[in-house]
Image (cartoon, rainbow over all chains, first blue to last red; front, side, top):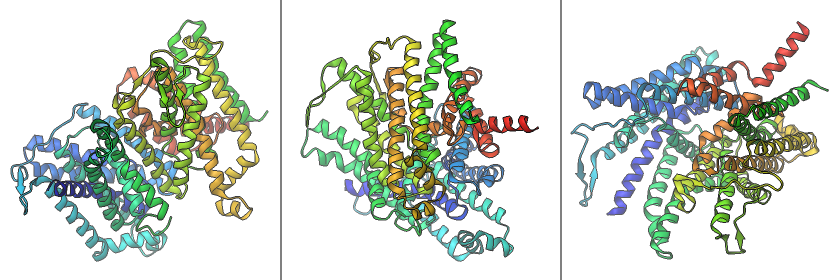
Length: 303
Length: 329
């Protein structure tokens, strides 16, 4: 029973990571850009949701605001800064987007201060439900799992079944060619970037609702999303989904199981501390293992 | 003398002059700021070897900076309480001697860099950036969740470690130690980059296929550069720990990695004294803008953005360009 609960927690965590990793991997796949400021867009989504929800009293409006604010911030940043970075090497991209993190974090701290904000869930989404088998589980975490699954399905449909998706795939394959065929590449890039930003903003709002909304909340998640992408393979949405679920499960189950496992051959207090230390390293060990076997990631095309 | 050498000498001389001037004026705090600039510059000099000369964009050098710091903190705290650090496979006691601690700090970082480098170098480009960042983050979480040496709270030690013949508590004498090591590291970098190995390293950065064609195996060369680079950064971490007499997991944080990288870029990638100039300017900005606004990092971000977008050569690149212009114009 406890294990089932941890599996659900891992699934929820994985879905949240997928929302982050999908945007990152899309932007990398299409534009060849590494964006450290993706975590800032996550933070912007969370703050927009908290602010609008506090003003209007409606969580739903807050959620809509998180999507809109993150997408708008993404589009704005793309047009002002990111656009100039496509022809540059990765080092310039890393530095410029690192600079953006500083600007966004300090800007947000300037407006909202250092104290964390908290979101209140609407009654329709709060409380626990009883699952088949008698397990009590928070409804909102199930909602996050459902949202993640819906986004995965939606992205798959978007990329395989729509005109925009065809252009995105064509842009990945050969950007000069689709430009020559009359596609407005600059606009396509802005749309893809805003789409990734909106997904990050959504993830920020959802996670902000179960934890807290504060400056600097984006970067730990960003680094985990990098681990997800390295495991899944850069540029692959399928890889991002599989990688995210693997990382979510490994982390959650590791933290739940390892201290108990260690307790079988050492003292309880020692087992607890060294067990949790090892559990916190588990996903990176997973990443190292994937690097040893497949350096290009599970679904990556090239190294 | 060529112009690069003059610029390098001027930067180093400026740092020393600021420290000496502040010492004569009795401003111990400014001496400490100069010491901090020398130490962070040293960390940047380490990264520059991998990043500037080898083209290895490591976003995880905080790992080595932190390892250097923690080795120092652990030795010092064991020296204070008299317990051995290790009893198996051999007994290792704590120590207060910088000359004993530094090699240990560098050795520990070298081992970590060998492991991290061997794994990370299986990838390249953007993967390499993300993987090095992730491994540094792994060590960061380990430091937080390992309560033996302070966990999240960090580890403080009350006496600065000692150096034979010097009083390390005197700011100007501690500056002398740090500046001396910085000079050694700069000399080492200058010699190494002109050696066969250094030329091979730069060849692999400029064109891996061609360098392979002339018989250079890229991975061992790069791994060696990565390990050397980590050892220099770890030495800086050890000095930084002694400067503050305190180490905390924030030495391992991604933000630290980013800052070390900023020193290198701000000064100028692949320039010998670039990281020193970058670190000095960074500390000057922190010191000047910090009291004006709590949000000085936003200004730093904007400045950094401007440098990346409009002045890719960094501060030294800008200076050299200006010099050339006055000469020809």
